[in-house]
Image 1 (cartoon, rainbow, N blue to C red):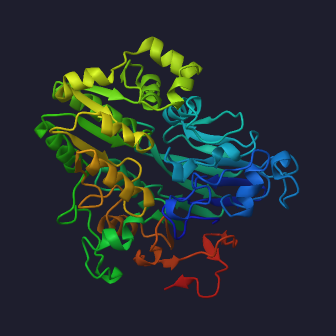
Image 2 (image 1 turned 90 degrees about the vertical axis):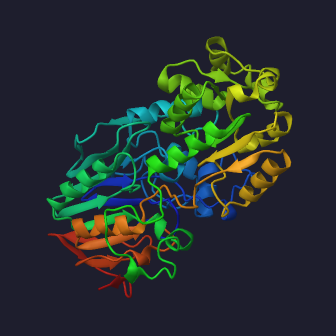
Length: 471
């Protein structure tokens, strides 16, 4: 395991058999408070990869980067290596795939076709991953991919938007499972239950499990003293918490109450959310209007012609010359500031945080700013307080349910239920600030040492580092 043990996201680990190797995920942890490249520090052009290696943002793995990018950094390059390597991505969140563009183009990267459409649209607008020119290979649900003697089975967890997966990895010596982002309170919870039943039949040797919600500010909503012994397994929705359906119903109910303009901030990679806002606009007699970059993704992904609002930001004068912007404006209708002022209650308008100063030019009477899991997400991001301050000064009511009684990752009791039902021999909790709180049923909990090799031979997992395993 190279990263992701005590961070939100950024899980990267490899499984090898002989000279065959699969690397699962290639993103970076979401932690704006400690980001090296914070928007002020700029990466160097010729040293973009070796600088990231030096500050610990990229995993130090032999055989995956180009020699020209490594320079004199002491790693074996992809050209010099005899590893048979492939990289697999569960879904399109940046904490799972933000660094795939830094891999040598000769390293195969597997990602679902829907995710590829979104990523290519993001790259066209300059908002995709920093990337070398490369191709992506398709993941087809439940069709195994063989990397030499390693078999990777993609288990479909969500069949809409970019599509979500978990991965079951099988070698001649054992089985390893990675849950990816795990939830039992979504509208596709049956897929997670199917995954659970499938794993029960496999006798899983090692499970790496997402336990994001085991951190203090979420766990205390259900278990005030955060005692892991009190996390009792249950497939039911914890009392007082919201399911996905209830969360979105609450947002829609609030939208229906608003007489003036509704501004929304969502995560632009989430095509399920984009579709919801389009539906909600139709249901309430509004027009759903997107900023250009988001509109281009919607245009490419759904094949529709969304309404576009161009913020009063100087960079958009230059962007009008870019091919993606020309294509968008040639095919879609624009909505002006005058249009919105003439009928504020007729619009549902997207606003991203970089363009938040637009609020001061928009009609605020009876208006609402709907924060729907957009960036910045929460108070752990220094930008969140600034966003709240600007929204207030611009005269908008602020509405959100996120991290109040709703969370996007699996609630602790439900995650514990999933783990107990699968009952792996070795449990590696990760993707969390507090992985130690997710306890196994009959097996052992392992909190790995990063960069330490562990051996799975004839279904026996060893060696184990001093103090790293808990009965």
